Image (cartoon, rainbow, N blue to C red; front, side, top):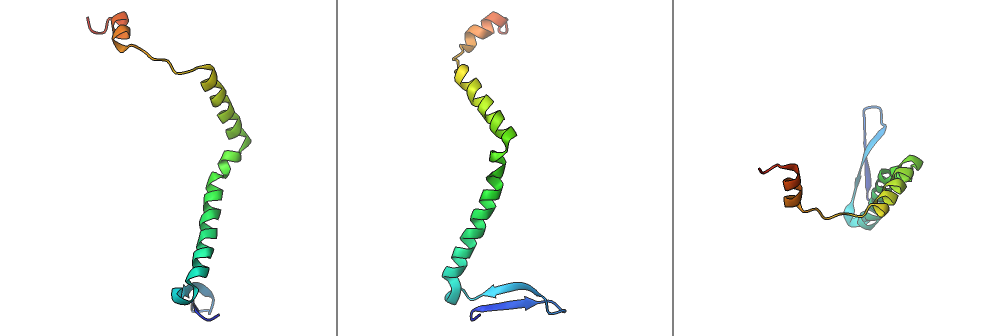
Length: 84
């Protein structure tokens, strides 16, 4: 293919490739985007694990049933006799 050169080892096996970006730059960008997407997809697969899904569901339910509370730190310190 015009615009592609292979680097071969002593046995003649292809080990690397050099791409002429002036000729094939757009093709390379599309190829690279596909590789990048595949890597991202693989890194996010753990989110689909049933155990992780269950843990996330439990955490969301706990957060829903236990809304955040505002604490008065001075009042708590007084009750604990920290600053006396």
